[in-house]
Image 1 (cartoon, helix red, strand yellow):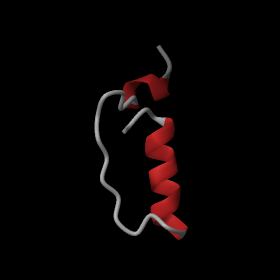
Image 2: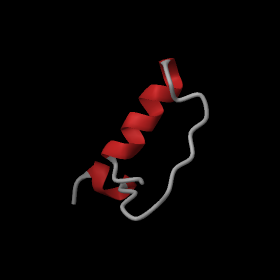
Image 3: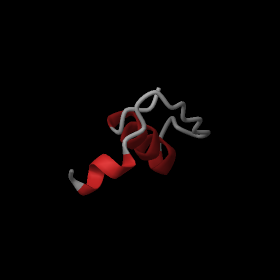
Amino acid sequence: MGTLDLFRLDGQRAFVTGASRGLGRSMALALADAGAD
């Protein structure tokens, strides 16, 4: 098991405000890569 496997968000929902640009966008993309809906 890798370190990133500990942070998987499969089946979880993430709500990010201000996700159109900058830090919010980066966070939204990272959460999606981690499996969040």
